[in-house]
Amino acid sequence: MAVKETGVSYYGLSYPEHAKKDFEEMIAHNCNAVILALTEFDIDFWFPNIIEIAKVAKGMGLKVYLDTWGIGKWFGGEPTSLFLTNNPGNRQMSALTGEPLAAACFNTPAFRDYFYRIVEKLAEYVPCDGFFYDEPHYQLPKGIASITGGVADDWSCRCPVCQRKFEQQFGYPMPKMLTPEVVQFRENEALAIVRESAARFKAIRPDAKMICCVHATQNTYYVTERRGYDNWDKVGKAPEIDVFSTTIINYSLPQGFFVNITKRTVDIANKYGKGNQRWLMGYFNEPENLDRIKEVCHLYDDMGVESLFAWTYRGGHGTVLAAPHALELWDKLGEAYGEVLDPKYKIK
Image (cartoon, rainbow, N blue to C red; front, top):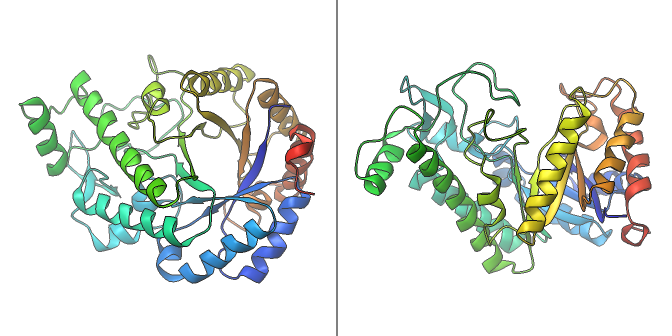
């Protein structure tokens, strides 16, 4: 058995005594880890209880990872952003139209300072085992984003800060076309904030695992999400990253897609001596036959996946993104985890 870690994301961050019951349920569903999905509002308003909830989880034997869910809309997720509300002038901008987008430009000094302060605060006060970079990305300035990238020519970010940085580095104005130099610039800047924040986190909590989860595009030649983290080699070899992770695949996609993404994920991790992690869809979309969840978990285990996580606790039950049979899906996920998790890592 390759799988050493099984877990789910969790939003219930108000009261430790209620979280304890949820953690008991997670353990009964063969989880040994949890990702606390922390919104900017949670960190601003509920911070004392975040500390206590993390203590409860760790006291029960769960590994605890922190995810600044949806921060600045740079990370993935539905939550609104306090930074965007308070800093309307620090948005990503469409390259072709110049329109501001509903996402913070993470290359601006204002956002980097904001994010670094949050990271250092979490590292200092919240007992945890690591930090989770949740689908960091440049915004796609088009109506519909998809795992195939779509056909749009537009991209971001070409705000004044990005233009100025680009010209300083390359000696000429930033093009509106996605030239090789622009691609290089975007990738380097996207990785710079990850590396710097990870270094700051580890400076306070040296044993913390830094996990970077990138979008699971099928390849980077014909199809790319243009998210800034498409070069998996570049992300995987960053010394501050300990675990290379790739995101959720919809169950309706062909089996070959699951195999391709998983092989490439494990290969990148092995190439650079990192841990690996794969994600399961545990909300909104569910397979026609819930036993498909077990099949996917066993596939990942057979292919050498060490860490398996699902978004989210209880199949998103009670949210607008709940799976059609959320609680049944949650139970099936628990059974699947029990079948693939190496028994010596199970919480007794």
